[in-house]
Image 1 (cartoon, one colour):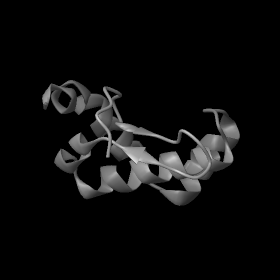
Image 2 (image 1 turned 135 degrees about the vertical axis):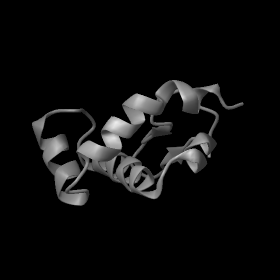
Image 3 (image 1 turned 180 degrees about the horizontal axis):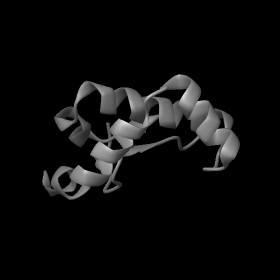
Image 4 (image 1 turned 60 degrees about the horizontal axis):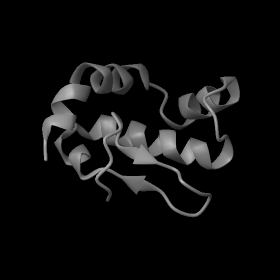
Length: 81
């Protein structure tokens, strides 16, 4: 866990470790699945290009819902702590 101020609250800083914000405990489980898949995809593609998003879609077929939830609740998540 980390004290990041990023909306999703996660980071794939290198190819061995993933870090997640403690604020994600307030997110619904499908959002957690999406955030983990997003960061795992960064282990393969260190960008947000088409191949990255294709990999995310393979890992979480319905990623639109969790992405929308994060956009909608970003400010609220960041208000904790």
